[in-house]
Length: 467
Image (tube, rainbow, N blue to C red; front, top):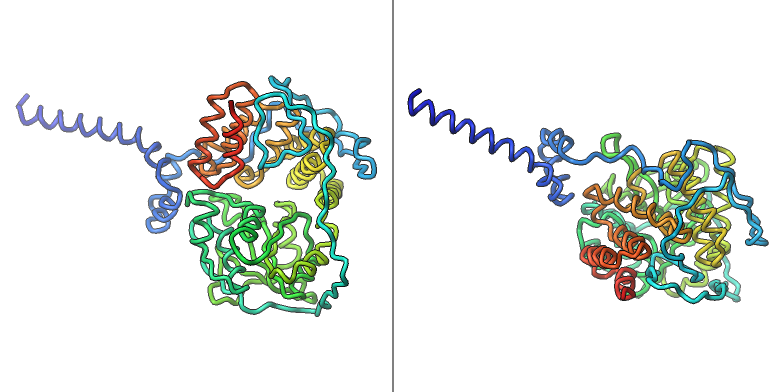
């Protein structure tokens, strides 16, 4: 064999080795790329899409069923919701088995996203009696609802990558004369550009703390409530589900609603993802909006002038009182389940609402019922991205001692690029690890969450609580 042939063989072998190593490394390289960059690359060079699909971890069809849930896909009975006597409320049947807690669950009356996981057994606290927001005593005259109305002055702008929250927020701030841009809002709300979620309460807090305007976030909204706000000159930002196509799957999205037509039964809105960009808005039917809105428990927030405080509270009515609001949301979810036992989102909403009631009242039954409702939603199938936006399953499971199920949910979320950029995932993973006695693991989880969002005071509180 000639020297030339030997060199060619050696070069071919080296090339194969380099190619093989490159193929082995490609998944890690692609997964390390920022999500915004991969989206741009695939948009500019569609030929790359099969490559990205091949080397990235595909999203599962739905979230995994927690080990503490029912083993078989059966029907869970609805709880009997007796809000006049909460302690008499019966849990769903059959009962959901729960893992034996390694550490007793916290007994504090409320545990929100803002509540760090205690690492020692707390002293039992008396049941808190929430103080509802005072309804104004002065007479507030609401504007009559005309058959159709559209507010003027909302300028739609395309959102940056995964930036629908700050984009809609800035749009409404601009409507009221505040010049904040979506980039400026995002710099505070999601300093990590790859962050996949900004919750309504975060944006309401931002408005109340960083601007001269006021904001209020709620769930269990209705089309009639939207019409009343618009009739009184106030646009409404709703949180809804959205599925652009089968390939991308389901996402959460924000939409600013600024008009309605009662005869046509349509709402007019500005969509920072779909456009149009001439500020003419888009129209969707009441039924279309409600179907997508249900997927986020009919959540919304409003931004308004300080002098409109009494007006807004009068429009909100019972939604000013957190307990009444979550009772209403639970009953609404229950009615949806009675109409369709396979409505996974209704079961999820029931779990969220009951868990919220547990946080408001300190009643353990609500956490048990909430956990069982979440179990059924997972059995029926909830989109995997739901845990990018909604976190009450973690709290329900934490309160009933199902810490391993919390870890399973967090680790499933962290398997995807998007999920690794949701700081709340690290918050609840840290809580679970803390309860399981892994303090160093909890510390690492909290620290990673703060790397994603240094302004997340719930994570900072949790980290500070560790010994």
